[in-house]
Image (cartoon, rainbow, N blue to C red; front, side, top):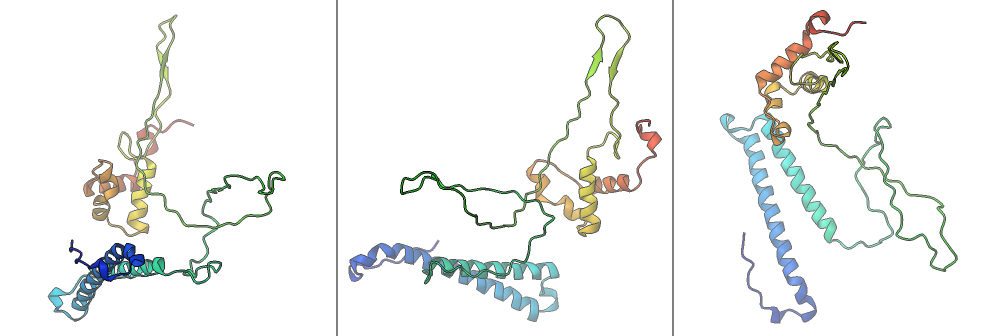
Length: 238
């Protein structure tokens, strides 16, 4: 972390001295952004003009572009945060966000004022309208355990045995994954073109303490593609 240079505050008007630490901090932040941009430009230059053996792979090339775009967006956000609005009433221009699909579920959050009492003291205000804004939210993937409980019951007056509901039929009888887990792996493999080795390296199950090896996922796909006959896995009689 670079050390801030010593500044003779006596040469700065007293009314402006309080802003000195913020200016120094901002300068170091901009220097860090410039260093990142120079590094990314060097990587892209190597990818385009470097030797064949030194050129980046396609996925590395895309990651470099993503880092460059993120750094540029960060610099723009920092610049916009510093710029004083000339006309506060004017809406800030935004990038075209398109239209969010109507099929997506909406979760409404109503923000009410702290008080609806009229300042003039004539009573409570009544709603005359509302402003609505929509933002895209992403719910992170969540792992959970489905616990199936089948109670056993017996008569206390006789010895006619016990009764219990039959176990539900599954694609992987006695196996670990639910049908939802199998569907996730299949969609990721064949619809999203995410190979099994990439799925096995996902940090989502790892953070939950679950290890899913590539061979395990392959077994799941094989079981889902060629399930046993209904009669052999105990499908309930109809």
